[in-house]
Image (cartoon, rainbow, N blue to C red):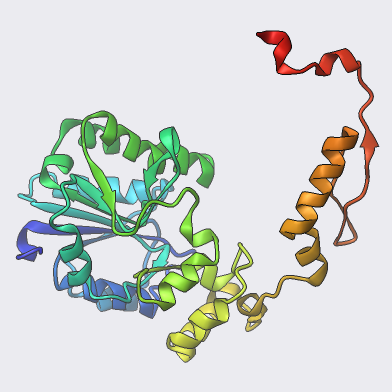
Length: 316
């Protein structure tokens, strides 16, 4: 367990297009402040009334840099470069929480022989990475030259996808290639756990301490039971937050239901049937979305030289 926050620092990366600091950010920071001294870095200007709410943090850095969360962490690390830091935690504002006792999380991880860890990890082989919304580093790791060089070279990326590839995946791969050992609070997931229904179940079972803001605000992955999260939390406060961010009081995204035709179209049985048809008859298959409706059976026979499709035995 972390004993003193005097040698333990959290750098929190924040951005809001309107420069508003919502209640859940303050609540999260107060929970962290029991264990960490906090450096709050904003990639936007913050309202004066909101700055007053951060009177418990050690440092506020408000500077537009357009390098997203990794750019904010770079600025925070520059501020802390002469500090005697034992443990370093990097967190961004893409999550709501924690909704579990932080002490429980750190106690769970303290005996694991790792140099850095996070709550969740994703990917395999060269794409394996600790997801960057919560990254914890021991001194051996964050004081290393390769760690400092990685962050000093952070630059603006053209897209979120580029940032994930270069920095989120890149950081884990850089540290591993330099001999650092990593782990995660929850077991590794091949795909982002926050992009499927499992995140809802784990959260409701008090196993996942955080929830992604984007799922709550817009539900881009069309998770079916988002309303269960909404019902568990403070409805009034989060309703105000959703309305502000979306500029709408429409909550349909929280009650998403899979259309019946999609249930059939993407059912396991139907997939097996059409796969057999395609395999047996050597035909292409297409999905065509016309006027918002998926049309499946556009089947075009393969026009080809049969000799081009010989068995692998020809290559023995």
